[in-house]
Amino acid sequence: MRIVLLGAPGSGKGTQAKKLVADYGYPQVSTGDLLRDAVTRGTAHGLQAKAAMDAGRLVSDDIVLGILKDRIAQPDAANGFILDGYPRNLAQAESLEGVLAELGQPLDAAVLMELDHEVLLKRLTGRRSCSGCGRVYNIYFLPPPADGRCESCGGELVQRADDREETIGRRLDVYRAETAPLVEHYGEIGKLRVVAAEGPFEEVYGRLVQTLGL
Ligand code: AP5
Image (cartoon, rainbow, N blue to C red; front, side, top):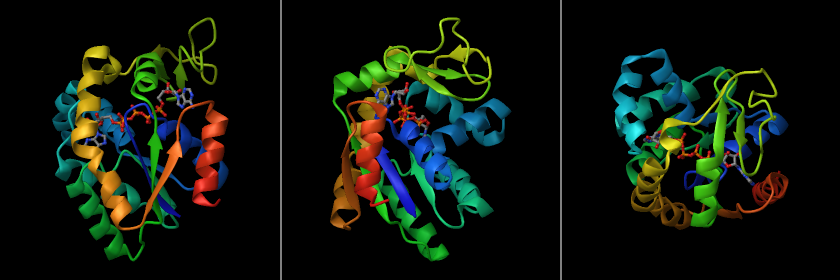
């Protein structure tokens, strides 16, 4: 199975992708995670990407495509993958279609996670991630333990640099201008599915699994 999770920042793509990974074993390919990893390791791509990410803008298409191709060439992605955060504009969607055509592995579906603006803001401002293992919490919806450390590894919980209020607005603007047109694109090629992303984690997951026919 090869699917794209589409949706605004904070719509729950990463959360739901992790649950699909746990239940079905397809790897999650998150370009955001791959870019943050490149930034942390200080690679050439990471250094180029950092300024755009911190400002809430998209990283250049060629950098992200290079990172994506390397990742989906790994053996664990041979039987399918869940794309989280890619593509983010029409040029990236076309690049993806080219890469998948070369591999002879067409996309099965693009799932739009649909959510109200007000809820998105709360999810983003409330998100905290473990600096050790990456586990994601939310001070409003999925609170961490009272001691403020990660339940899995005891690591320190941090707020993503781009989850500050001043940057969130820019990310949502970029989503509306550049990524939202993909909804029409995937509708036109008959791959679009839509999932209501409000409500408890398990309910959203139930709708997602049903939509995908899993
Ligand atoms: P990226 O990391 O992809 O961020 P994003 O798309 O902005 O998405 P988020 O990770 O913010 O949200 P999500 O939908 O995964 O939500 P989550 O599950 O965490 O990209 C970051 C940056 O990298 C971009 O701005 C750009 O600069 C660059 N980039 C990445 N890909 C790129 C590309 N292809 N091209 C160019 N640049 C690229 O959930 C959010 C919070 O809500 C969490 O706290 C979670 O616990 C909570 N939550 C989730 N579901 C629920 C629920 N049902 N109920 C209550 N709370 C919930």
